[in-house]
Image (cartoon, rainbow, N blue to C red; front, side):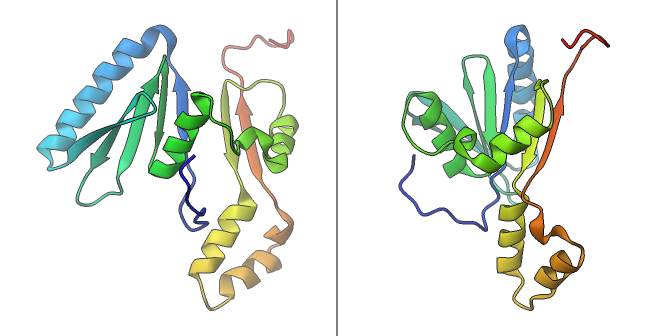
Length: 168
């Protein structure tokens, strides 16, 4: 993992999708999107990190977005440190992982057995980050008044193509 202190104000959003046989089509689609972005003035930068090529899309109006392919998985994030830490973990580095977070494991267990698509939000981190940017204390008061001060996380899990009644 990169040796940096974690910035709670930096969003920690990561997309990971395993494409299997559709990988070639996904790569073609991304190439088309990058070509359109280049026509609009964006540029790309590539770098090698632990044997993986990270491509970063840089535009004037949007935050940088980095992505890479590892086997048939597309991994992307606007937080390049997060992207690199995930690559490092996939490549065998030790360090903290989402699966080690008890809030995540509790949310994953609570949403059910099917995990074709998962969404996890650490409400605790999100509220802390937003509160740090809002010095008046109004956000913290609103969170408390609405009863969200005890919300730790939000989770969603979707099973695709499951047959009713057979649990698969």
